[in-house]
Image (cartoon, rainbow, N blue to C red; front, side, top):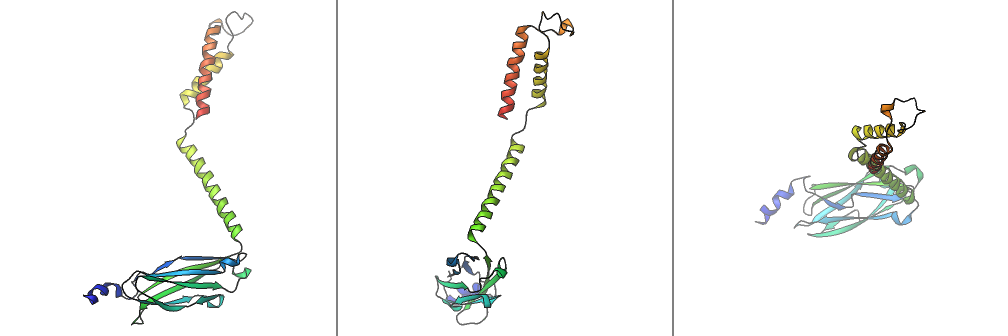
Length: 206
């Protein structure tokens, strides 16, 4: 029964490896970030051996780069950056955690963790904040253009008609060159002004 329970998990290279975090960011101007901790979890019912490998081992110190994790336990792996120089800014390094069963040597699973050295935590936060603001403004403009349409052609047409009506001469204006049938009464102009006000409010609300 015990062998059948474990057999599906012992396929070489297929065992899921649970590590947190999956990304390490070191800041040159913040010494507290020069030492970071990886936590390796073992949710299985058998013990695991682990080994930490790195693409650039000369830049890092890994405390307890190899060890064991008891069943359903976890272990912390301390990683220190020991080569904080500007020439390494932005370079992506990789750590690989390999695990195997205690009684065997073949790797049952592996997990990669990326590590990056950045010049300043404040600059990074500023860039992220500027990026968020730009994204927010872009989304707002898109929302306004997509979901808040402008005035309809009918509304614009009515507004133009009302403006034209207000520009026409009033009845009794004998000096106007405009034909008499285009002269409007005071009441008609008041109605046109009222409608134009409603149209203006509707346009401003959109």
